[in-house]
Image: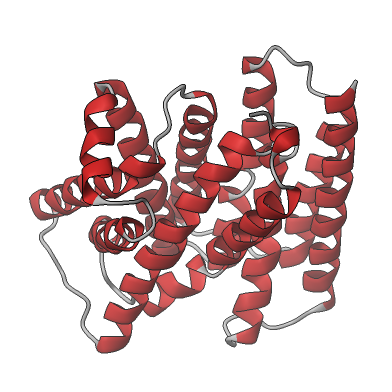
Length: 295
């Protein structure tokens, strides 16, 4: 069934859920405190595995799905989940959250290009314009700061690495010929084990030191890395391939609003101006790519 045959409201609704859940991730990472990035990834993926078990059908269907996937699917999906989350959490440890969100969620530009090239489509020039407007918007949103420190630069590198992991993961899910929804609990569980073993081998396990940190870590798993990835997997497989790549551009705006509401960022005129630019870029890019898909 093509994306035109899918109920539009379902795609739109799930896209909204994904954008919201990913938008609050930076705040939840702050609440998790000093938990190391790999360990936080492991805890989050355990929560994702447990929550996705309730949404992907009976256990027999999960085990049947596991046997259908080749080794490269396990490697790509597992590396995408662990790398994308761990690099993002590490970036938030070393660099300011606002800039990290901006850099990480510039990955839709690369995803849009990769998706079009893989499908033998020529990227529309206006798509690049709208995407760069979105990137300019997130830059305006957070204004200018002093020269970054060495730790901040390291955080920016981690943020870029996280974005590249999401590009690889999303493109693979979009083009992979076998459905993976029923196997998500196993993908999450394997990723959790890998992340915790890596943390134990490299720095030792440092469990959350408070109830609040535990709660934030678990919510990260159930929400952004459980429900969020199940919803995103459906959207990238069944949504309009010319619109889906630009949807995550709304995440920095949601993240900025969240950080303002919880008192982590001060509301400024540049912040709201940047949010407006991001929203305008998303709308313009969706309209452009929808029109190109009909040509």
